Image (cartoon, rainbow, N blue to C red):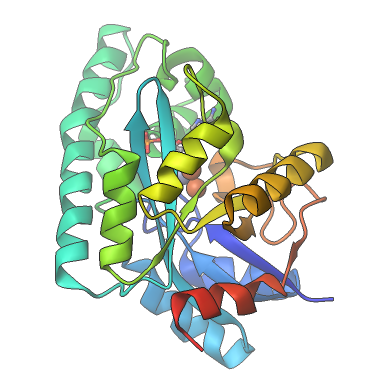
Length: 282
Ligand code: AMP
Ligand code: ZN
Ligand code: FE
Ligand code: FE
């Protein structure tokens, strides 16, 4: 039985493996179609396509955009985007610029805590324009300040920790509109992360659907069987497409593997046909 993985990060954002290496792992895991969904950048897609083609793996051009609604970060995935579209890439470049305003402030906080680290070191390790906290976590690991990315987030980088600095983020409605303007499908990523202060997750999802949301990531590495069932029924109730993926990052989430997540993820390849129909790609 073949499987999909529609949520993968590479070295073009905060993943630790190149697109070619990620495709290699996907091949070994029996993945027949996948999406590269780097944060705020589309440059990894071409390399991924070049490596995947001879292996018979289909690459769906994707992206992941972080947005903010009230207290909650809401991540929106884009699929089948016109990834070379100039205006869309300009929007992503603006998001990356906001990362470069934020990251040096995080570094200043770490320095104030007595840690020897510079933003230049982080940029060198990242080797991409889409620089995120996981890159800072990896520099802290390399310096022996922490032994895992989790520890870096738990001690310094997560919200509420001493080196946390917020980033200016678009609203989820903006992210959805940008993805749709680039002819993509907009999908709510990992719904477990959504914090609701007023109303329920269903209320939030209904509002996003009214703004153009196309789907929800029902299958995800950390979802329990019960959560998967709940989100499947949410998708049915609100009439949304179903997607799924591992959110593989390599080193910064070492317990998550391409295609199988923590071992129990299975994204059925039957989803793909429906997604393609909805995206007008058939
Ligand atoms: P940023 O985009 O710079 O705000 O960093 C957020 C990213 O860091 C998320 O998209 C996750 O990939 C990753 N992340 C968040 N929390 C953790 C954690 N506790 N451990 C490892 N990675 C994390
Ligand atoms: Zn990430
Ligand atoms: Fe995410
Ligand atoms: Fe992700």
